Image 1 (tube, rainbow, N blue to C red):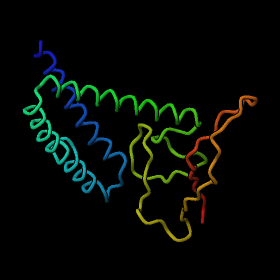
Image 2 (cartoon, rainbow, N blue to C red; image 1 turned 180 degrees about the horizontal axis):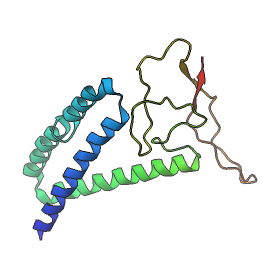
Image 3 (cartoon, helix red, strand yellow; image 1 turned 180 degrees about the vertical axis):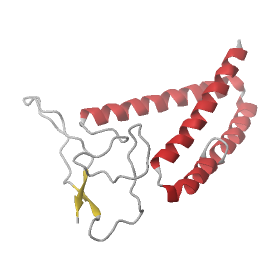
Image 4 (spheres, rainbow, N blue to C red; image 1 turned 135 degrees about the vertical axis):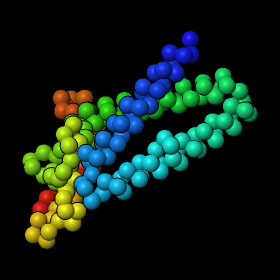
Length: 165
């Protein structure tokens, strides 16, 4: 029964690789495409992360056996899934847009990027002096919402808004 799982691994690995390469191409301006692809190659599945994972996973499997290795991997994957779900829920509760959405009110710096909801970067990389943007954090919000109010609780993280200098 492992053969169908191995077939799924081939398909999902290929789709993940194509998606990451496409994301780098959509998110970066032309001047940074080669650098972005090289960073992806170095830290991606065939780079440092994959190499360290293979070494540490092999050592752990030899020292503790395959059953415990796969149990730890499953618990780690479930923990990461829970962390991702909690972050998405926190963003929704705080009424913050997704990180992949463009900032509102035309504050997005537009560039060459493709669609798909990714935030586009500026082209050229250095903005001109008459049209620069500066991040201006808002004062921190209190996260406590009293039971008597119907207002949603404010997020404890400071918001960053873009404004012309």
